[in-house]
Amino acid sequence: MLRVVIAEDSVLLREGLTRLLTDRGLDVVAGVGDGEALLKTVDDLAAGGALPDVVVADVRMPPTHTDEGVRACVALRGRYPDLGVLVLSQYVEERYAGELLAGSTRGVGYLLKDRVAEVREFVDAVVRVAGGGTVLDPEVVQQLLSRSRQGDTLAGLTPREREVLGLMAEGRTNAAIAKQLVVSDGAVEKHVSNIFQKFGLGQSPEDHRRVLAVLTYLES
Image 1 (cartoon, rainbow, N blue to C red):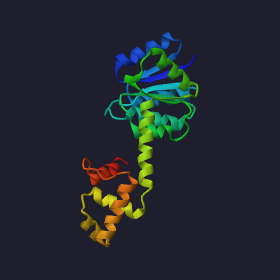
Image 2 (cartoon, rainbow, N blue to C red):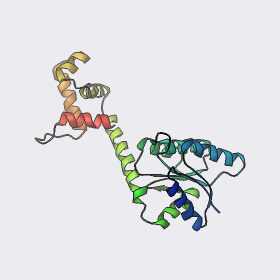
Image 3 (tube, rainbow, N blue to C red):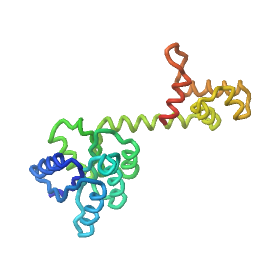
Image 4 (cartoon, rainbow, N blue to C red):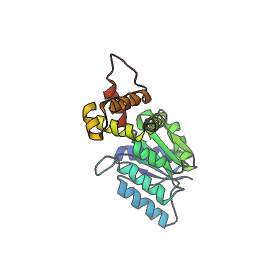
């Protein structure tokens, strides 16, 4: 029987998940309402020789309701690499999703609450993660790939082009950038043109290429 720990600050949802999994033959050994309690509970179980098979955790939990749940999951994966972790969220927390997947993807899941359409689908995800499988919502994959592509775009810039783009992001004009870098205005114009080309920003009456380039830089 798979042993599960649930971390969810909503009592109703926590009890609902407990009932749902219990009715389908899983053993919910603990239910907690914050990240600190999750860490302590799993540590205590592990110390007693009863490490759970999988943790099901919300991302945003007390006290700040930002990322306590997923941070606890990242910490638990560091302590217990064989522990399955299934994160439930209303949002894609890219930084921590990336951290969860940075090492081994074995036994990792990240699902968006609003996109879980069936109970059976959710239970199957818990079982798969507990067994070492990987379960990722397609939206999570899309956002992580998008961030990766943005990073690849910046990687194509030369060091000088990065400097120019950074100064553009500060609102500097080409003349101000030239003065800052002690180069000619023409050199700056050439760097800006190269940046537009590498970002795929062609001439368009509807788009301001300088703004779009800065947005790409900030998003990356």
